[in-house]
Image (cartoon, rainbow, N blue to C red; front, side):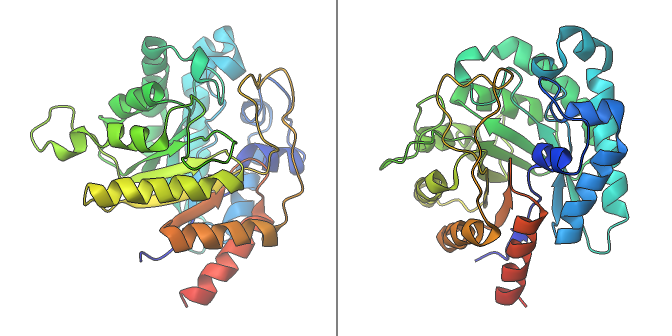
Length: 309
């Protein structure tokens, strides 16, 4: 089994916790605009907890959060600024810290029904080029559907760096894991691996990892099981990872900018118990998403160090 690497936690909720300007619809982009030193402080909190990968705070640098006008004026510049802050903070760390660029959902988290292929490609390409100079790897985050994954893959064709694809899951526990779109996880993974097996394909996919994020911890176990089944059938070994949230289950009609999603008090010990199970099933990169703070990451690091001294 690969040695466990620890990712950071939820940037938006950490910004809010430390007192950064934070409100809807700007969300985590507000600190970039008004008080970027808080972004560096939030990254530093996760690094101090022991995180070995931090994700650029570019998640809200899209029209859905900024609005069309502000995105056209500042979207790319804000994403570049976020990448520079992450890189600068990582370079000051006492241990090796990698910076991951972020390709977020363009039309709102969890909303596969709002997806627009052509517009998404243009916006994500802008975010890719804004960040690429400053990052060590890529996360396509909170992918709700196979169609969205296809666009992420096409954007990341331009990358020479490791590319990780993180799907968000339906919060309903079942015998098979499903994306927010209702599509099976197994189908999604098979789809994104299709061209990876074609040695001469012009559109050869670069899939270095499959992750599950911004879903309740309870549904990730089945998703990892389904992933390992597909990978075994294809005789393929890549990174598997998870960074869950501490939300209550999210409905299919959730409107991210119209209501604050309910959260629960998930202790570091409770989150660690989920992480231990994910690791036993094959996950080798684990962190947290919304509501998972430095204290959770610190617990993960302490446990990891006890099993990999």
